[in-house]
Length: 525
Ligand code: AHR
Image (cartoon, rainbow, N blue to C red; front, side, top):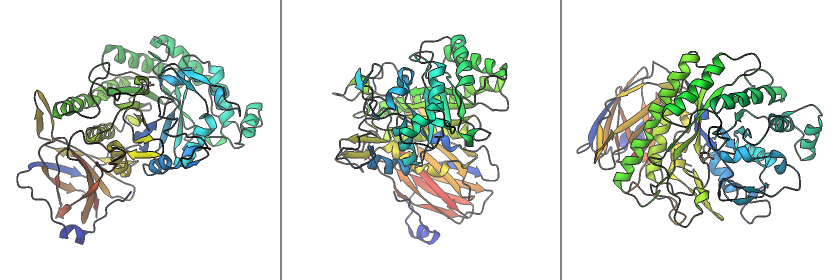
């Protein structure tokens, strides 16, 4: 992917679109007031054994005519490398609570069933070693979700010993015999998934008794992880959205953590919150109009209040913010594509999803002191995917482009932006017209991400920049003719980033945002 870099001279030579007729937005950015670190783990991915998310999307097998490395698609690996994916959550989701790791490590794999997702057979061809190989190929850390619902602490403990033991235990020797003598590193451990529902329909108290046992007995033995800050971080099942059922769950887990003994601990509490205005999901992922665009964006903006609600409960028991809120399932959940297996959760990905992704990433960044990890659902071919595949073909979605444009925000330091967002109204829905975040990367460079939600009007942005001496600005913008424009296998670049002109005048940055667009600008000093 090309990042467009325009020097000051070039920027000055490029015609700035006339703001005449555009609405205006005044932003003020003070780079001398740094906030929290925007943890790179906020840009995590989620790959479940579901539909074509793993099989076909990642794994084609070593004998496939599709170019692969040890069975893993080369095109998908190359695309994900450009996203600098920090971590991948695997193997589920609901699948994780029915997954038995032993069936996916021996040379002879057991064929099982996937009752959660379409009732199809599970070949177990993509197991522990294949997942770790995939992570190695894309350069990401492992976020392993262990089976609490139908497994035992012993099964999970043995999986971790198999993965991480350096000493010559029987399990470590089995790992070596299966091709990997060196211990693997598991950076993050999820203890169950949605244990309040598909993970076993547990009460908070029942789940807590499980959490304590798993936290105590499921250990990483990898020598590099034995001491802080390298130890494996454990993430407990947290709330599933909005409302009293979920605030009670958060309260119960955090209260127990507050009163914990030496024998168990946790580092994160997960939050699952999909953009799905009603259940079952009925919004179409393509072939919709402005009303549905506005409805989905209104729904997605609720993420901010939901995070704030659960953060406030966490603050009560953990004012030092030791426990991260981990939004490890988020994204748009639409009606299945006509003709697809409804259990495969296949949907298209439009410009609306790009705007939605930017809004959520901005929300996470604004809560970066508490929200330190997030995983969009899901990486390939499932729900709000980065990548869609069809046999040998692959297409990058609008959501992919937003994740790629936001790479500079990984581990950058949040910088406050104040703005008069204005309003965009569609029927009885009124939304902010503009949304923006800013951050400084490790080199001190300022990055600004601005989204124009309004699908009809451009916005002329005037941003005052305090705390730095701006010299030039450059960037790229993502938009398309329609709110439901998509990238298809026949037209893979219908929604693709392009260069945008930005001008520095003294301490002001000026640019014009196209309607329904996501823009990322860097400011050189
Ligand atoms: O992402 C699809 C499913 O949504 C996951 O398996 C489950 O955790 C959630 O309900």
